[in-house]
Amino acid sequence: MNRTRQAGQLSHLLSTRLRIQVTIEYHGKRRGIYGGWHVQWTDGPSKDEMAGLVFEYRARFPLVEEDLRLVRGSTETIQPRRHLALVHSAGGSS
Image 1 (cartoon, rainbow, N blue to C red):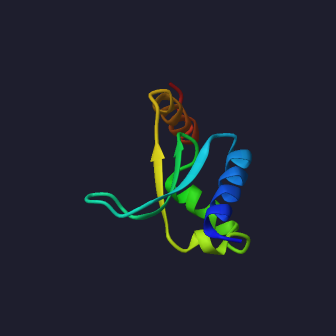
Image 2 (tube, helix red, strand yellow):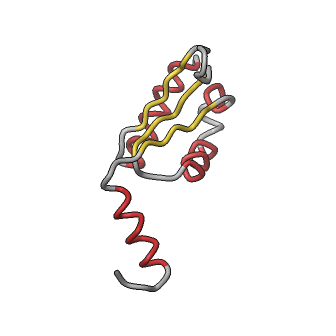
Image 3 (cartoon, rainbow, N blue to C red):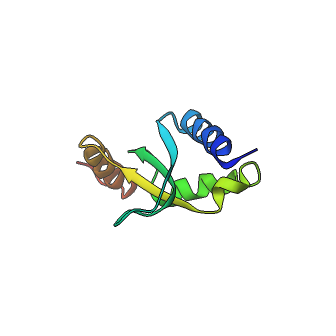
């Protein structure tokens, strides 16, 4: 199976598991732009968490996992959620 097909399958698997849109696309080298595979998502898991998920699937998608750049976006609604999660985990209240 080629890299493009593996990228599409891994993207679908991650999107389904996380219940958010995850895209994996190849970007050629350009000035100021990293050339290679980009895993992109908005909100949801941190870059470390996403790297861990991709690592879990490395046996099924070995060609894609070789060279990935993780690109996480965020929306304005995630900031209050992150704050509430931090306050809750610290045992405080808001």
